[in-house]
Length: 396
Image 1: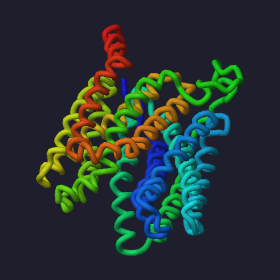
Image 2 (image 1 turned 135 degrees about the vertical axis):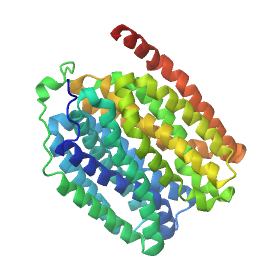
Image 3 (image 1 turned 90 degrees about the horizontal axis):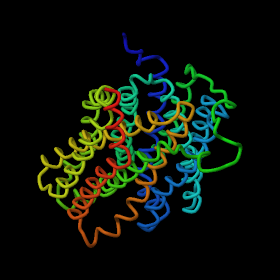
Image 4 (image 1 turned 45 degrees about the vertical axis):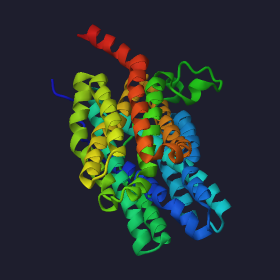
């Protein structure tokens, strides 16, 4: 029996649109703190807030999109959210005070949260269930490439042009993404049949998918640990004097994901989620410890490969699992529940971990995060892994 087709026109379109949504996010997140300090003489804490407050808006946007996307219409939500994203990005040209910038960041984050939930929901509908892990892995490569290209492009434009050049590029990317979405065909979902368990009141199930919560908790803790890399690796490579090698950290990280993710996605479908997630968490734990002990450029770049193999593949596998365990008619809520958890973990991580750096130092911080990820692997066993083993035994 032939496997259902994955590489359809619609799959390619939604992956490309997702790339433009995320490259805007990563470009702006990389330059925003520097922009706030340079443009408005913001203190380091306020500059950090101008970058991190985006997450608050993203969570609000995901909550709205996850509960409303099938009532509004998936394609309509995609168009409206990208247009909103474009409009709020253009308003950076008009923000003439730090207060206005902070407010704008919240609205820009909400637009991003809505747009990324829309792309994630549409991709979950397009990907065949039989190829859920493989398809999600390929789809998530659009995010991975944006992770590498966005920050690099932002820093390059800031050094060789000006901050306005960043906003122009982001606006252009969103405009192209909006146009690319036109040929996309999205199946319609009848709202009346979508939530049979919804009695009309607003409750927890209106905004979250309970079956996705176990893997969402694991994802929040893993993203919390990854935020130690995303936020503090630049300061760490300065401290250990590995600037040249460190500047390639995320490029090598993305390359490792590009090479490994398609194979890992197939393993997810064939062997099951435990076969992928346990090794990914254990390898990520080891990778964090090695980062804290790195004193040579080769060692640092080796860890970037290991982080790509581990965290990079955990993330796409966890996203696939969140959709897999949820009812088909609640894919949108499963997607938003998953990404809200990722946003919370990545958003509070820098704030909390910053308090420990003066005491632990960077080496101690990364060793501690390695322990947290190791504990997360045990937690995964109790929240999902044990039950998944039982299901695999029954099916065999």
